[in-house]
Length: 328
Image (cartoon, rainbow, N blue to C red; front, side, top):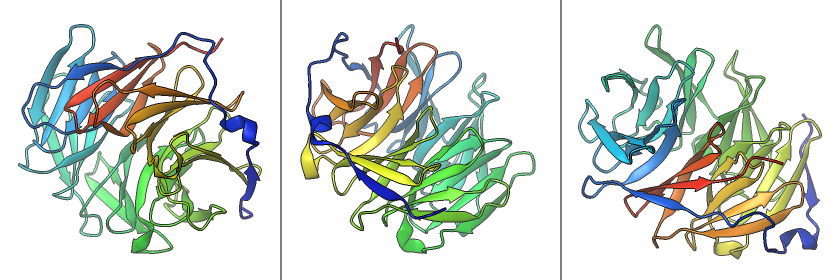
């Protein structure tokens, strides 16, 4: 794959305009456990939302229909659950970042089984389910890995550029290709799921620091550039990169990102603590306030069936929901 070429977005693309659709809002759900810190959310097929309470070492579940929240303690105390995902079979998987484990939650009973990971990945970060395996990143050690739940064994790989790469956000393309944001450098990692081998794809600006990823319907990989205050996209087929300055400028700190059911890319500006929706068809941005100040959305997920986005509002002890219209 040739090095990506940077395509500069026209200035008009950065103009904020009043949306034609009804203005979206963030609905908040207060998590009752004291001193909680929701880090990542995941949505199940039944619409219930699972989340990690990193500070209390619990896995929580919200039923949006009733507002009821149930939480389950991790078997290993103070394991610092970080990332979370729902596998195709409905099982809920999380990373126990402080103790080098992956946990599997039975959604019917709440029973949890933990898997000890190899010493090479002592700080698992973000998990995703691809095929029969659970893939995960380790931002602190420049590694990533895959667990086979059937055997309980995991294999790890080191990012070519080493520990400084900080493999962070992770997504899978429809063809199974795995993409990893390399926060410590200006690159995205493209992983062959059959071999685990990574090819680093450099971004044009040496100062870029991609943090989280989302996959567009056309196969483009979208990323939040946390250091420079940009939203960017890589087209793997054409080898091109396009970028748009975030409304909050250099200090915006773009963080969690997801493709919404409305076809827009939604992401959090962690600096001012608000959401931004970007329409790739019109290249227009819309800013949406988060009601409770101090929230940082480190990760977010879409519920395409119900036309919703779910946010972990870290720092405020809340989960957030945005109802968005489906594409017309």
